[in-house]
Image (tube, rainbow, N blue to C red):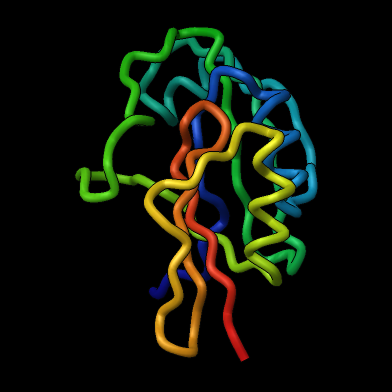
Length: 145
């Protein structure tokens, strides 16, 4: 049997409200939020008794979702936010945007910082990486033409 679709990408954050605000400014819509807790959830994650606040953000096209999670219990045990682009494991999420300059201007007041440079690849794309809320690595791509 083949995969039907990818439902979401999960990102663990400390400041759920700040992350929601940042991704709203980027253009995602808050689809819903709630608490995930109890023995059943711990069986899925392998974390035992857990209490997590989550917010599901949806892209404007309705096809992709970003699940933002804030763990209350158990506490967070590792921090990968300062890893460089060539680190092993899940690292970044890339968004296609209409106007990369406008997007950067809107996100800077919310803490976005350019990593490296904004570059143009041939006549096809303008691309950059930014560090978003809590240092999350986010890619932005504007298709040209």
